Image 1 (cartoon, rainbow, N blue to C red):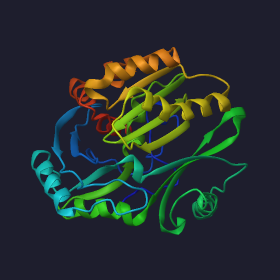
Image 2 (image 1 turned 45 degrees about the horizontal axis):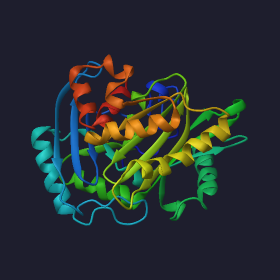
Image 3 (image 1 turned 135 degrees about the vertical axis):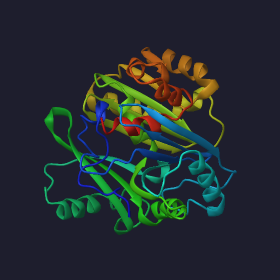
Image 4 (image 1 turned 90 degrees about the horizontal axis):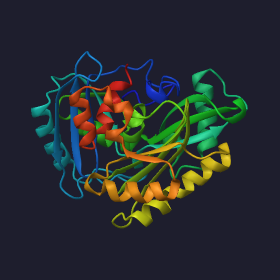
Length: 321
């Protein structure tokens, strides 16, 4: 199995490098592939920071991938493999390792308070699984767990844990392996995007991928809120506000302050409508992720990917910087 499980979770630049080097001890393939409900995408990165060598996107037929933390995700494996095959013709893997980004619903993320957590990996994993037993809708013994420590409010210990069902991860890995590639690292899509955010103050990220809306709040070196939900109908501005307000309220209650800014990703042509609605409610700067100052120093290839809502592919390469 790939390196999803680690003693320290995934991310190492931007706020999440300060969220503590989740990928520090992991391999870092230069080729990254993302699977979403509606498409697959891949990018191959050069040695320079943000230096894009090639990328491609291929659509998936409806129902080929149905993201879920519990149930089978790939009811049409041949359709997924066909799309990946076309993808790898355009972005060859040459049989080498790749990083695999999965839909957000597959990876459950928890932020847990602790008095202390053992440094020994097996002991820490056992305690985390015990704590998560009542929080995940499946047997925790069937999971892959990755985690990191962070300093919460008043310098108290928190642990950010990412949990996924082994057999679901394996569905995606098998599709990749059938084409001769080797997934070495598996990561949730939005987690991969976090290094693109500002590393000062509190930043709200609202990210849409297919019918999945993910809300994240990062404050300096802390992941403070992570909430992902599946939309039952087409997204309109009031529905978006209903989805994200619980996350904002939780942050305000916990940290005693409001967010400093908001960033949007994945909204495409509807970006301006949602930006205006969120700006009127929060009274803070709300911008598309592609237009933020953190993105301007990246190469033109990386900026183009972000403008096409392929931010997770860019965030991945920043993890190694």
